[in-house]
Every structure is written in C-alpha cells, then in structure tokens.
Image (cartoon, rainbow over all chains, first blue to last red; front, side):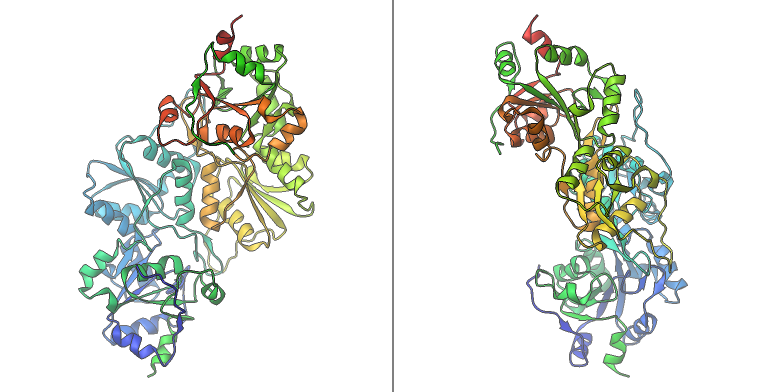
Length: 304
Length: 304
C-alpha cells in the first residue's frame, strides 16, 4: 500500500506521453468520469475511441451497484459508446464473485438492500436473492403480539446504494445479521455521496451501509473500491502487471486509493465529486499521481 | 467518568436496603424497564407506587424520541401509571433544550428525521421544525436537469428513531448539513436496537444517525444517554447530588454508562436488551453497580 503523500502533478503536454506510453490498460470509474447521472461528460466518446485506436485496453470499474454488468453495457451503448459486458467490473458483480470465490453454499439465500443489478448478478452466479426492489414498498409496523418474520436460511446480506431504503429492509437485514448464525454482511461500497444526477450529489451506498452498521454493530466486508478484491479478476483478464495500469477516477477515497492500494498509476479527474481545493487540502492524505479537469483533456494534450 | 470494570452485584435482600436508603431519586429508562412496546413489564405499577410511598423522587429518562413529554405522560396514564410531564426527560425534549441553551436563532429552522415528538418539543421551545412524519411518504427521484431543493434557512438537523426513514429525508438532511453553513447535526441518541414491540428488537435511532454520518461524513452532537447533557436539568429539578441518584436501565452502553458518567449509582435490569451472558461477557467494559431481572424484584427483596 502506497498512500504516502506526494503532490499530484497536473497532466500536461510534458508528462502525458510518458504516462500513456507506460500504461497498457486504463481502468475508468464511471459516475463523475464518464457520465453524471444520464449525461455523458464532454469528449468522453472521442477519448475512449482514441485510446482503443492506440491499442490500450479499457475497463470500467464502478462502485455503483444499482446495475448489473449487462445493464451497464446497455447504458454505455445507449449513450453511443461501445462497451462489452466483460469490460465492466461493477460492485454488484463483485458482491456475487465474493460469494463464489468463498464457496458460499448454494442452498443459502442472500438478502439484498439495493438495486436490481445485485439480484441479477447473484442469479448469474447461481444464487437465490431476496429483497431488493420488491421490498421497496413494504412497511414494517410495530404491533403487539406480532413477530416480524425473516428467512432463517439467509446466509449473507448484501448492502448497496438503495434509493428505496426503508425500515422494513433495515429490520429484515438486521435480523438476518444478528440472528442467523454466521450470516455475512457484505457492502458493495461505502461512497458517502455520488453524482446520481447531473446537477447535484446524493447519499451513496455509504449511507445505507452505515445504517446497517448502526443497527447491527457489525462492520461489513467491502468488495468495491478502495478494496482491491476486484483486482484479481482484472489481473486474470489482462495478464499485465498493475504498474502498467492506470486508474482514472473522481474520488480520492475510493478510486485513487484503490489504484494506489493495487500498485497502479492514478489519474484524478475534477469532473466529479472532488474539486481542486479538496485535492489541495493539506489535511488530505491521498494524492493521485496526476490530475486533470476531465478525461478528454488527453485528446489535445497528446496532440493529433 | 467512572467506567472502570468491577463485577456487578446481584441485587439481594443483603444489599437492597443500603442501596435504597442511600438513594433519594430513581431515574428510570422506559423501553425494556417500564414496558416493552405497549405492554407493561410485570409489577412495574406496584414498584413505582411503593417507591413514591417511601418518598423517593422518580423521573423517567428515555432515549426514545418518537414522543414528546406530553405524549409520554399520556402513554403512562393510559397504562394505569400516574406520571407528570415534568417527571419525563425524553431525548426529544433534550434536542429542543440543546438548541435553547445554545441560543439557536429563532429565525433558523430545524429539519427533523424522526417522529412527531421531536416536532412538538421544538414547537414548545419556540422553534420551527420541518420534515418528520409529513415527509414519510415523499419520494426523491433521480432526474436529469432537476434540482432537489432544500431550505437554506435550516440551521440544525435533528435525527432520532424514524420508522418512516426514506431516501427523501436522507437527501434533505444531507444537503442541509453539507451545504448550509454552520448547520448543526444533532442526534437524539444512538441506540443500535430497541424493544419497539414486546416480542423482538428493531433498529433504533443509531441506525438513522449512522446513515446520516455515512452520507455527511460528520459526527453528531448526541443529547440522549449516555451523554450527560440532560443531567443539568435533573440537577436543577432535584437539588440533590448525583451520588444520591440511581439510574435504572436495561442497556449498558446508554443507561448504565450515562449513570456512571454522571456519578450516579446504577442498576441494570435484565428485562430489556441486555441478558446475563452479555453482562458477564469478559470483553464488556461497562458494569453496573447492581443488577436484577426486573424492577419489581425490589418489592419482595425489600419485604413488607
């Protein structure tokens, strides 16, 4: 882990060529880097085309768990960017893979606080998910002589970003974690906020995960950034050393820390949640190798 | 603060008289001590009558913020126990008093994640509350080109137990705390779970407070137990030293810690969230002076 503080370099025509020549694979975060909500950030399409034309490998590593890999590929394509499912590493996929590599028993169930994407990835990995969107309108009422029942065969609770969070889901997940012996508590990620829409930030998965920590008094296993759990899958895919990868993201505490933890080069873009004053804040402990305002800056810096 | 570990004594006919003789005022927690949900715990009524007949002062110090003092007095009376409003110190009242003693400006507003009790106490203290139950059915949707608006004159967000927690409230409170300069973040309490019904435990205010910590990356001011903020009001009321008070509660991390922090004697009852094995867990750091299964044990221990 290399999180020692060293001032980030502004990406410029002087350093861009050496960075690009030394990197074989670019790892992109999505929210705040590729898009904000449903709007592409300026110049993204041309930048990705340029990188592909130079033979660079591209993957998209997103903490947003509301979609599955398939649903992400669809979103990319609907925005006019050609991306394959296997180029996407979402935290929804990571949660399912965590269960798989840890031989989570197929007869156990998984309770989901989060979106459809987690349920789809669980199903693709051969697991039975409960909860998620179908519990979005359920109500939990405090009644005498009445027990709130939960499924005793739930062996893991996966918590991700959930705009339909409610007390029913919180009670269900809490009962599973507190009362089902050995029940796992898995967080897709802990981002405090995110650019769920183009104009502002909203509570992220870190909000729902913290709620569950508050009621269960347990800490989760985190599978998304900055955890390097997904890196094993990326290494398997690329067969290149992490020093030849560059993580491009808009968050210091997830994207840049993930890149640094894994030994990648790191590039912060200011098109998302981090602004220049946060980057330059002397109390900040995480510094990227490079920073620039948005990924399309590379287009003119690298020249024609 | 006296939290050094010393084994709790089981309340018995040998030590009960010296405890009762040295105590002028008994401070009772409610959930898990007086009632569970809407059911009185066995013998509570007779125990409180016996204490009053012996000239003991009684107050009820509850972290449950869903009700105001007035609403609590009504609940006591409906259960056949005569209690006056000024004998009740709820965390809803504490939140309003915190603003008052800190000269919170009357022209500022207070956003509430929690129940009617907080709004009523704020109003009685002369403040304008927003949110609470009326935001329970509101929905926050992620839409392009659309801004989620919040009131810029909110100067404090009060978070308590809220069975109607939703993403709308979480976004509203988060925006106030993150974007309104100097906005206070006040937690009524941080109980992980509580006996909201007779048969089981449910996520407590600690769940909603943690959610807001997760999205705002801020820590709250806590006014309920184990914070001793309310003790100033109790001292004003009784004019007796805290060494002549006994805090009776079912939770080590709130009730007993509150009593110890304030210099009171402490009595744990096992009729709520703490069982004997938790009390005896060697990793536990908080020990009451005495423990017993329920408050009515005093009746036969003290004899006729």
